[in-house]
Image (cartoon, rainbow, N blue to C red):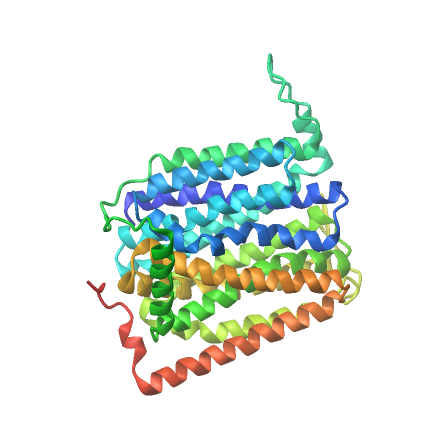
Amino acid sequence: MKKGFYTIMAAQFFSSLADNALLIVAIALLTEMLAPAWMTPLLKLFFVLSYVLLAAFVGAFADSMPKGRVMLITNAIKIGGCSIMLFGSHPLIAYGVVGLGAAAYSPAKYGILTELLPPEKLVAANGWIEGLTVGSIILGTVLGGALISHKVSQMLLGIDVPFIDLGIESPTEAAMIVIMLCYLAAAIFNLFIPDTGARYPAQEKNPFRLISEFADCCSTLWRDKVGQISLAVTTLFWGAGATLQFIVLKWAEQSLQLNLSQGALLQAVVAVGVAAGAILAAMRVPLKRSLSVLPYGVAMGLLVMLMAFYTRDTLPHVVFQIGNMQLSLAMLMAYLFLMLLGGLSGYFVVPMNALLQHRGHVLLSAGHSIAVQNFNENISVLVMLCLYALLIRFDVPVSIVIIAFGTFVCVTMLLVMQKHRINQRKFDSVALIAEDKHH
């Protein structure tokens, strides 16, 4: 990999670390406010709303200047969102501002990969980016859970900065200061991201024309025989993944009797599996064979459904002593199960992401193709989170939610696989993979 790739990875790590730690702290803040339970998944909804509403504009913005500068500006917006949460803004509004920064950050983050690297490096690059992003999700989730724990929060509140009174009086406020420092670290790395030299024609400024151009870009990718398959899969995956974050927390609470901090650790276990699967895919799946991973999506849905039948009392009460820590057999099996689920997810999505980025780069431009991807994926996130919030609002048992969720994933993936077989009978669409960029 080129040297600049590692600087991009470092910037992405700290920015994603802060995003995920902030989500846990925002959930804790809602709990402090005695907000209703259905409001918790709306945090993610407000975060991704900008990905949909601004999709027609962020691609043009990402292509209007060097990607490193775009990442620096958008990271500053994330710091602003964290700041207004610190100073008393409602968590939904503040996390929405962070989402605004993330929506504009994403086309630059992924778009620069297609500018910096040749097509044959994209699966490996995505494997490392996804692996590192998942690593940041793990650490960010654990960091958020640790920051709101009594022991760490009391230690942070006990820190006295001479001659400076920050007015920090609660555990969540202390946690947000630490998170802002993570965003600051990402901004420092943004300063050192190299200019790839890629330049695009002057970007359209008329909003109506931008929307029209964006609609054409969406149509182009959905009509492409390879693009439509990879776009359908990633759209399903990211909507399902965002919802699964909250399902795991609710499952941990109701089936395993864990609190928020402990449930956040389960999310981290899933993320460990995703990282392992992503790295394995980077090593084993070349771009030409990326469509061979489609059956893993069906397996992922089936595995999710098994969660509905697993509780703390499913296995005998056996406790293992590991150093100073006690771990029950039920929790050990839950960890292994979630790690396997994450592994399937990572192995499945990384080749699909790389394939979609490649087809988008060939047919469109780096920024516009990622904006189209984000638009579709986050509409899926919005719809699935709204449905999940409604199910929680009407007190649908978590086991029923999990079975419905897993069934939807399985059926959708089977339909996508059938569509790919139909495409192949008409034309060898796999031959389109790794073709040169259109001019």
